[in-house]
Image (cartoon, one colour):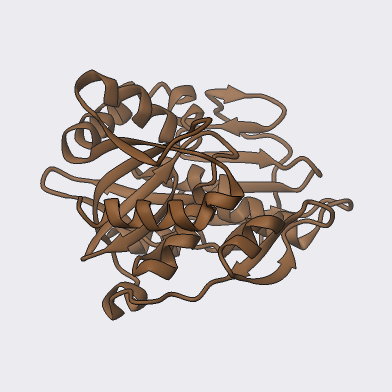
Length: 284
C-alpha cells in the first residue's frame, strides 16, 4: 500500500465499540495501551481512541469531552501513533516549502515553530505543516507530506504574523486556529497534496540578544536533535522496535541537513528577524 493510501485508509473513522482494554499489549499505562498492530489511547478528558491496523480508528467521546479536543488528538497523537505502526516517521515539526523542497522547524515546546512557519508565508515560503510532519525515508529519498490539521497559533502570535483569528482550539486555552495569507510562494507548492523532499531540519533555540544565526549541526551531533524531533518516539520505544527507528534515524542523519537557529524572542525585533531568517533560508 502506498504512503497516501495508508493515511487515508488507516485514519478513517469507523463505527465499532471501543474495548475496555487492549489484548496482546507490549506496554500499558493510564494514557496508552499499545500492541504491535493496535493501540488504545485516552485523552485528558477521558475520550478514548482505538486503532487497529487495517480496521481504522474508533472513537468513544467522554461525557466531559469536546469535539475540539477529540479533533485535536485525532490529528495529533492518534495520527502519530498510526504513522509509527505503519512504518512511517512523524516529526514534531512545522514546515515550509521553497523551490520544491521542505524546510522543517523543530524545538522545545514554546520555541515558536508554528509562528515562524506562519510568518515565513509572507516571504515566499509555502506553509506545509503546523505540528506533525510525516516523513517517509526510503533508500533513495526522504519525502515529507503536508499536514492534516489547521494552523494553530497563540493569540499574540496571530497579530505578529498578521493572520486571521478563527475558533479557539480549546475554550480558555489562548490558542486559536488561524488563516494566513501566502505571498510569492510558488503555485505548485500551495496546491500540491503530494510529497516534497525534506532537505533541512532546523532546531530553534532562544538567545538573550544578537542577530539570528543559523549554525550547521554535523556528524554525531545530529543524532540527539533528530531523536528529539521524532513525534511520540515513546511508541517505537515501547514496541522495542530499535532496528526500525534506528534505520529511519540513520537515513535521516545521512539525508537531511540539520541546523540550529539561534534567535531572540523580542517582539519589537520580530519583523526584522523574520526578514533576516528568510534571507538566510533562501541561501540553503
